[in-house]
Amino acid sequence: MTHINNAINKEIQDTLTADKVLQDLLDGNARFVNNNANTVDTAALVSQTTGGQFPKAVVLSCIDSRVPVELVFDQTIGDIFVARVAGNFENTDILGSMEYSCKVAGSKLVFVLGHESCGAVKAACDHVELGNITALLDNIQPAVSKSESEISGEHNSSNTEFVNQTIKNNVLLTIERIREKSPILKEMEDNGEIKIVGGVYHLSNGKVSLY
Image (cartoon, rainbow, N blue to C red; front, side):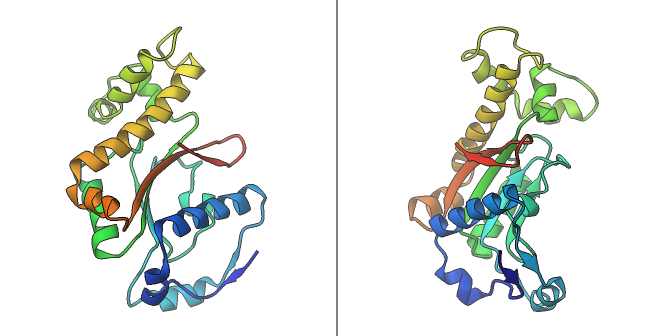
C-alpha cells in the first residue's frame, strides 16, 4: 500500500510504456481484490490537476454500478480516462474520445472492460426491444451471433455459458472494431506507442481477467 499525493505529470507520463501501464492496472486490481488499496490525498491531487491532466490509459467500460472502474484498478484523480456505455462497445463519439486520450493527451493504453452478468449483454442475448435500448443492443448482436456458433444449448440469457461467451466475444469484437474504425489508434498501436487490450471483471471476486 502506498500513500498517493502526487498526480501524474508530463514528465512521468513520458516515461511510461503500454506494458508498464497495463501492469500498473493489473497490480492495482490485485490490491483491490486483496482489500489493500492505496491511500490518497485527494485535496493535493485536485490542486495539482487543476491546470492539466496526463492520464496513463483510457478504459471503455459498461455503465454498471457494480464496476467502479477507478476503484477496480486502484487508480485515482488524473490517472485514467473512463468512457462508459451499457455493453462497453465503441461508437463514433467513444472512438473520438479514445483518439483524444491517446493522440492528444498521451495515454499509452486502451482497455476494453466487460463484466460478468452484464445486463446489456443478457438483453442482447434475449433480443430485447424497448425504446432506444433496441438500437443500443444492436451493437452487441455481432457478439451474440458469434457465440451462437460456438456454444450449444439455449441461445438466451438462461444459458450462463452462452452469456459468458458473448461477454468475452463482445470485448474481443470491440477491440477488432476499434482497430478497424480508428486509423489513428491502429497506427499508434502498430508503431508501439500504445496497446489495445481487453478483459472481463468478475463480480464474484473483483478480479479482472485479460483476454
